[in-house]
Length: 81
Image (cartoon, rainbow, N blue to C red; front, top):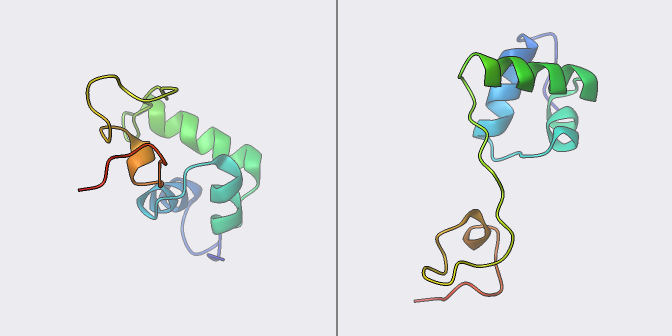
């Protein structure tokens, strides 16, 4: 776990996203920050344009399997070369 006193919450949250952590619970666990602080930091980073929110899609694309984030997460439907 990262020492939450070594850097500010915004830096810790950004670093957690760089490390492929994606949920507030995962970020809270990785940084040692309370979930409420993580959520506030994410809102601030979104407002400042330092993070981007992208909608999650459900299901596979009819035209391009493997074009979504599920491919790297081990989607069972992803076509393997």
